[in-house]
Amino acid sequence: MSKGIAGDERPDTQGDVRGDAAGAPRLLFVEDDDTLAAEVVEELTARGFSVRHEGTGQAALEAAMYENFDVMVLDRMLPVLDGLGVIERLRAQNINVPVLVLSALSAVDDRVSGLKAGGDDYLTKPFAMDELAARLEALLRRPNDTRATMLRVGPLEMDLIDRMVRRDGREIELLPREFRLLEYLMRRPDQVLTRTMLLEDVWNYRFIPQTNLVDVHIGKLRRKIDLPEEAPLIHSIRGAGFMLRVPD
Image (cartoon, rainbow, N blue to C red; front, side, top):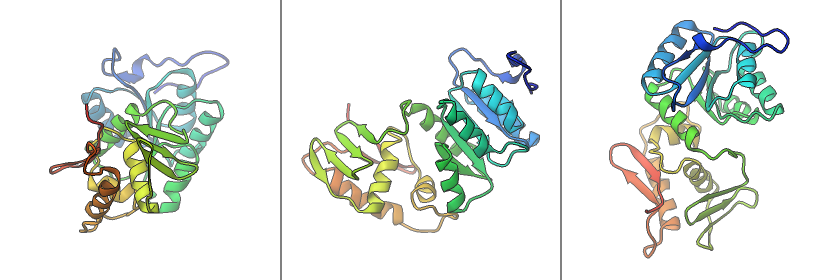
């Protein structure tokens, strides 16, 4: 890993970038557990990412300020400068690289604090590599301004301030949970969203119960969003989950 910088010198990063950087998404992975880091770097490199690993918050901050990364995975509990401190300093410098926070802290308050600090997503340890990769791909597909107050996907429009939803000008009344569920879908168009992801991120479950809660709410939301005469936007993906997709 690169050392700290002195003065205006840029850190030497050549040895830290793994994989083919040409056309590959550039990912900064920040984790002080070297064993876990080696496993994740190897797996993400095999999945087509160009990965740089740092083990401290200060080194991560320096790397992100000097280099352009497409996405960042940041452990919350880091020595000296913790993950939330890194995010806050980056945002203060108008560095808006998407950040996925990794943490063993799974309480709702911990998730909220991670997002309020400027994180874009939050994944608890232990985690499945498939889910980490899927979330990173979703972050890479987001528009640059992920903090916009107006979301638009095809004919759907969501005003996050006035809490209004419209489809082709038709106003749609949603209950709070339905609104949150649709917002989650609209921020991840064309992404397969598993029931586990929805239960964790929309309902904030810390365990996955045997329930049809997601299916029931998707059904209610679909009846409001997709009228019989309209092209369906909410799709069920057999054996996988759900997707918000605009027809070609």
